Amino acid sequence: MANIKSQKKRNLTNEKARLRNVAVRSEVKTLIRNVSEAVATADKEKATDALRLASKKLDKAVSKGVLHKKNAANRKSAIAKKVNAL
Image (cartoon, rainbow, N blue to C red; front, top):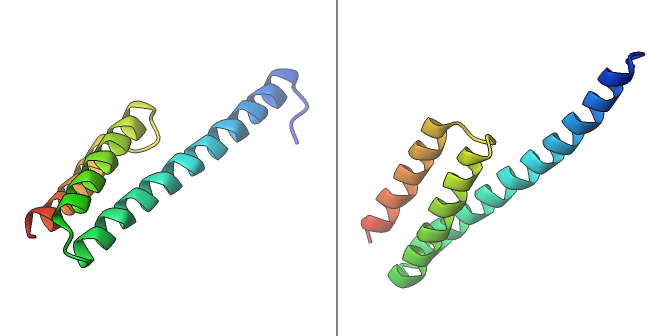
């Protein structure tokens, strides 16, 4: 455990950020799973809506620094490929 006051404060902010990042990553995974499920049921309209929402959340995660830009691009490309195959 840190003895320095500023480091104690920094540990608190790091924990808050970590919890926020975990929540965002979890939400992104859920949205990607929703796209996959819609594709599995061959529901083009539902899959397109899920793709739009997932892409938006992926971009938001990049802007917040939770995901790397290229990681989000790869994920968006993969789910878009699945939807376009319908």
